[in-house]
Length: 503
Image (cartoon, rainbow, N blue to C red; front, side, top):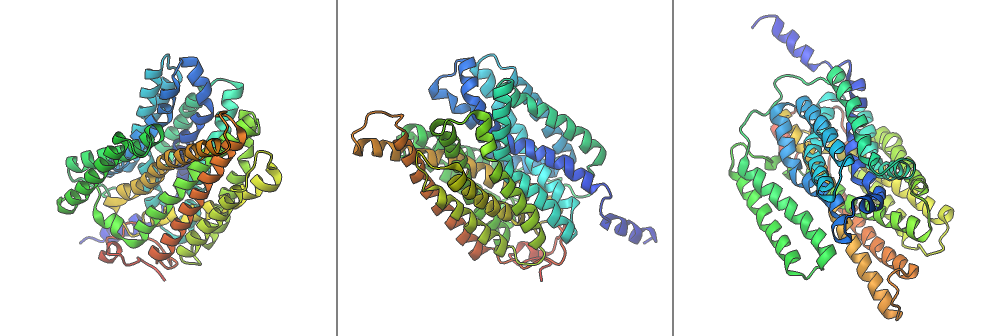
């Protein structure tokens, strides 16, 4: 061996001097993807009226995005590993921008729905590439904590920021700008990534794509999300709802079987069978079920019951956003290297559940300042504290070739969790509202007392789901506090359930 070999190895271990600038543009892309899940919510009534979308079809403006996104995330993560994360990141950004342009220029419902689905496709490529780029760029423990703290704050607060941005754009410009705004985000992120984002050579997974795995995972996840959507429309006992859930269970079981026997699987089972990563995926997915459902009810409550304008509704969510940012960057990031992850995630989810518990006391005449604001702050602090270690655990100890799919799993748990939460809790709220009307011999479906009762019942369910998430984190996550971190750890112990480089 020549003397240059050790030098090359040393150079490879050196951190990228442009990593903090790269973080800015990775974060911008993540913000775009996350807020797009909610930025359209407030604009939806205006888009529906403008394009003459029926009440039966309006929910597809949201669902078309989440179905494509949630169903294709694993595939997107695997493509990022195959192509290279930077290339997948840039292609995802450009595709997302083009799809947003088509949606903003839509002249009918079909054009808008197709554009939303296309956004989901490119989002499924972009999101895992962004997280895996972050994971392989920041490998030193303190820097990694700070970077994931910022990224976690964006992931947690992006949904609420989307409500604020959607309200402002809808009220002061047009609903179309809720889509056009993505073009601006994408252009800035593409230029920045070309200049500052760096990917090391030799970290790609060049194995052939696992096509059976792609088909089974995608169809299974789509059937699952679609099943919850149909439950909202047709009821839990409807034949199509039951059929979709059965189909999803069969497809996903076959997926696990295929992955266990394939030489180059779409999802190496070692990624999810590690108890720390698996605990992070499961805990965060359940937490998102509760949180996204809460966003929906609070939007309905503030606009429909309290008569807030779209902009004021967004402003009302700002304390939650501030809480998430504080929890992630000031609590999670500062304590990540001092305490085990479970003692951040578990108590964080407990705090979030207490914030939700306060909101079960909402009434038609509840005061924003004495009930909603403190509940939002507590919820935001709890979720922000939990997001950061969950994001970090999602790629702990994975081999470089698996970083994309490991990153895709955390995004999959969030996206599928958000879709399930919206459909599940909305169905529970609707049923509770109907029961209230029957018991009070009322025939007015818009009775505010009935509506708020429905929200309260659904939020009780969200509290229960959040408590389950916290309990699972305490049981499953056993990683100690990190001394340092190497994502490219091909250490056999790292994927056998044994914590890597832990104290």
